[in-house]
Length: 149
Image 1 (cartoon, rainbow, N blue to C red):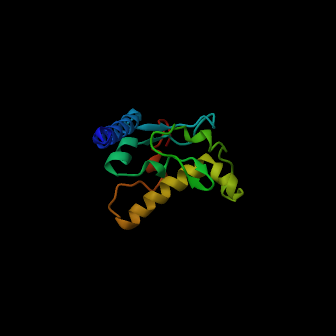
Image 2: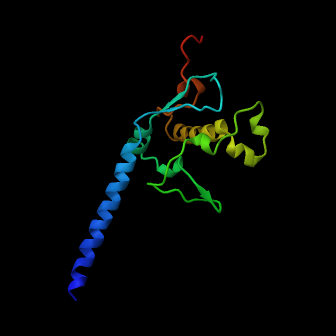
Image 3: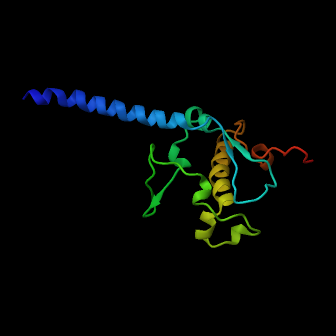
């Protein structure tokens, strides 16, 4: 009977430690991530400066909106799982006419994956609130590189 008195406090402590570990993992992510892929030797547009912390904390975007690991057609990635660079899986470089690629190859195309995920969300936000700051044009995400006109 004595052991039962410790069960609830033990579960609470274990839960608190788990939540604390998740917070610590999220805190390890940089505030801003430069979206720079090595799939291309040079970039025609400036790299996107993704405001990771702002998207997670201020905009309350679920981690699984970007981070994923698909098994059986379901995203099984959960907070605390390892995070890879997008290009680890989305490793098809952009080619002329990438939207004409077979659907499976389109999913692996880095440019299409990024643009589909980001643009669809931003356009949806703009439709809901035209005053939102969510960028929807190329130059809003890819500011001109120095020396470009």
